[in-house]
Image 1 (cartoon, rainbow, N blue to C red):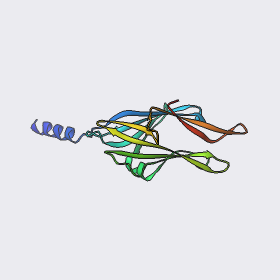
Image 2: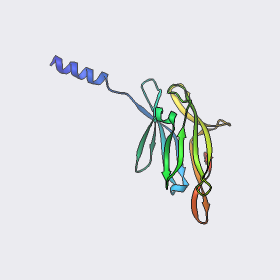
Image 3: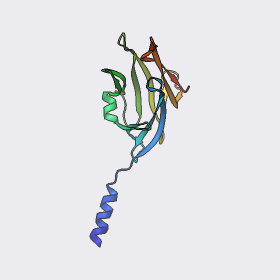
Image 4: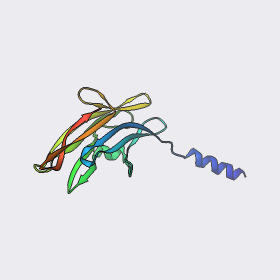
Length: 159
């Protein structure tokens, strides 16, 4: 019986604590207005471990280390439509995030949308750069040519 309780204590002491808190929603018009919900996954010190992206159909966990290097969020027809990078991010303070998006698949032009992941005590938020508006929702607006979606025209903050 003592061995059982010792084993039980060891198992629970090594149990990894994580908490997901909502960060922002992204409404993707080019994808038929699919809503992507983003969360930050925190450890027991409320430090960021990952970002989590959820839709009605999928869940994707994006490790902080991969985001620092850069990660493709959406790829279509051989194009990296949206990539997310945060080379200055750390788990304690956050950092500046760059969302690189396909503006025109015809001319192969990309644009950047910059925001900042910031900590406020035990909470986290996304803020637009340079005006520091807290982001609750982003809307990706389709760029259309001859009736076809060819990219993302613009990104709206809190539409």
